[in-house]
Image (cartoon, rainbow, N blue to C red; front, side, top):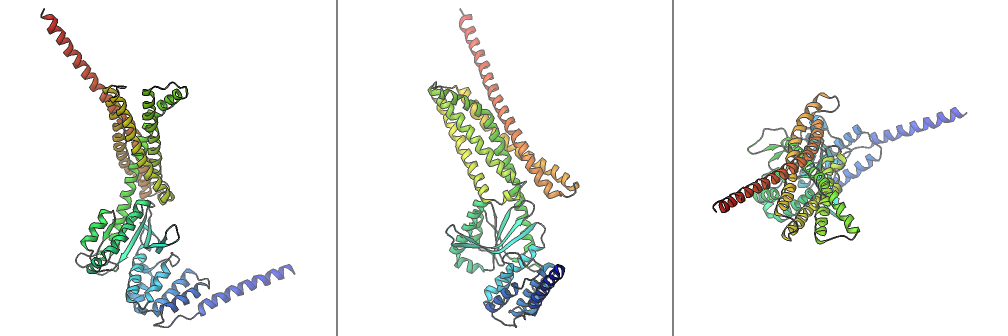
Length: 468
């Protein structure tokens, strides 16, 4: 009896699923010329049937056929969603944007079609992963502030990118110049806050004013970008060329972050090693109430330098960690922490040098001590940067070579890992080497001056007393 009950329940489930599937296939597509709101509602009802990917694509084909583009547009423009025209309908915003091509508003339909074509090309690109279409951005108060036409991620580095898709004439750009400047300002703010690469992509030429305004704020501008495969006209470029440029930018950005991270962590470690023990000793004297003016100034110098070293080390560690973790590369909070940690380290290092200068001007340390301390700190900074750059280049070469022969790793991943390890190693080694070389050079210079002074003094004594 138990087995019969289980069989009946199983049969009922199968029949229910089959019924739902039948309903999904029975739901008739809209007729040609159906208004966009009706097509959108029909699409939403179809989704409630629990469609597979293939069924969802077929529903979207029917939607395009029902709009102004019709079967011809589906075949010629969208390649029937096959080959170069294929895409994943589950990508956030993809289906919603495609439905806008059925709008009777020509500008809306044309813009949606162009955005879809770019997105479809991304689906076939190995360097980038399409994340979303027309993703809305909200303020802390819940108010929508902007949307991202196309959002993607660079596969090799994890760096996210944003594309603003346009098809506006130069005359229209100049008429609405203030509006486009506001949009570029928002893109620049996003770049500064999260490190997300930004690009302004226009089908037509771009006004010189917008090019200059965007370039000054680090925003890439691409003009005369075509989405099809036809022959290129004068000054035109394919969307694939845009992606190639963004790929290079992402790689250069990752390398720059690795070098910056290696230099910061190398310089930070040198500061910590050189100043933390002295700061601890000065603090111990403070607890014992044996602090003179010189001790207070030295505590300020060493304490601030130690804290600066910690800031630099944390900031550099975050930058370097991007090479190993894409989640860190995508974290806006960590990007902000890295940026402000580095800035705080710079402020602290400058303030600490102020304490050194104060000690020198107060007669608490000699000129030799002042010059040696200041120049050694500068040498550590320069050495860390040079070492991180050299290490990153060597690491990229070695990592790429190893990655090309190790199964499952790959050249791109090998370059990323090698660059990160090389930048760290070179930054630390270069920092200590730079500190030692400059300090040794300063000491040698003053030893030479001492010998020259002694020689002149001996010559004076000989000339003065020898003449008597």
